[in-house]
Length: 281
Image 1 (cartoon, rainbow, N blue to C red):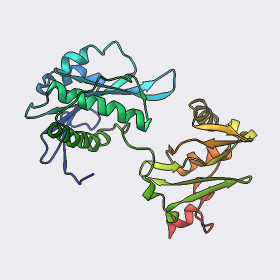
Image 2 (image 1 turned 30 degrees about the horizontal axis):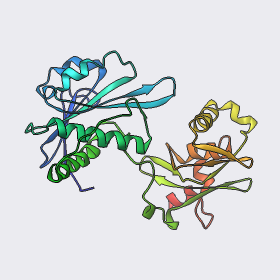
Image 3 (image 1 turned 90 degrees about the vertical axis):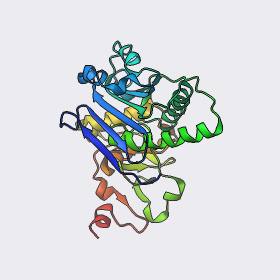
């Protein structure tokens, strides 16, 4: 992804309230706001344009973050129809400042965005289907560039559901790998921009320690990973069936150990050097 200069305007002077974002030499523009400023958002001229939008929040039944991906020829008219959905608490939409996004363009973007949100699996996708749209080659290339800019701006605006969970294979170099071992089981992982990642095929203990019940977070985190199929029981141990991102090395280690653990000590490189020592060098 190319480097970029981003300009963010805080309409109320508050980074969590209504704000706009643009990238130098790009015709697109993003507008974001919390649900509490819904009316202010819709009063802006940009909301009358065509574009793609995201409603982000939390799905109570599943306990997961959730996102709705949509498209509209008039953003504000479509957004009003989502007030009956109570999962979302933030809105982000993207439009073109030169108003050259056609219905076919935004349907193409919606289809690609839904597909990518499914692939990353970071958030529960509230709407899983899109008709998409076929575009001439030149238009398709333009929309892929637009899509790339959406990827750059979303995390800046507080939405990470399109960020890939795992490193590319080339990033999984031996020098960067860390190991967490317990009772003959081995998990591999690495530091990640969003915290720590445990790689597919890693092993975790089957049973939690008695002391784990003093830390509800440990039990809840393991149960969630079991429930969504991330941890699969095989031969008296759990196996990670995909790469999983955690907020910290310790958050990853407690799942593997089945109880409290200091990730800075539990994770070591191939030479047995603990992460704490590695970071202090």
